[in-house]
Image (cartoon, rainbow, N blue to C red; front, side, top):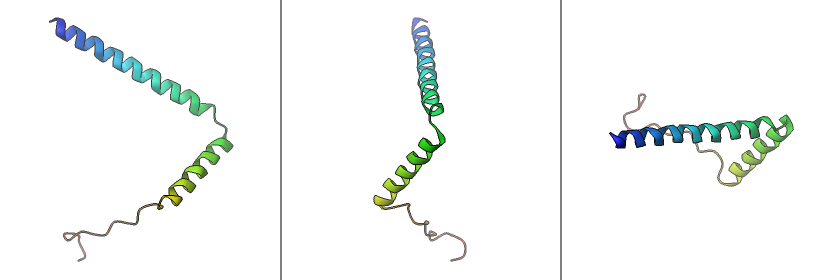
Length: 67
């Protein structure tokens, strides 16, 4: 019976910690101006383009319709 109590307590602590992390992330995101968001997105796009760009469209496999 004690094991279940400890597991329950650990679960509650995990949920509380997750909630705190999400709340902190939301506060940081809410403090950004639209210009900062736009700049970050452009930096991410430039970074992905220099690393090979977006993947090409997948080619249909042998069982795909239309073959």
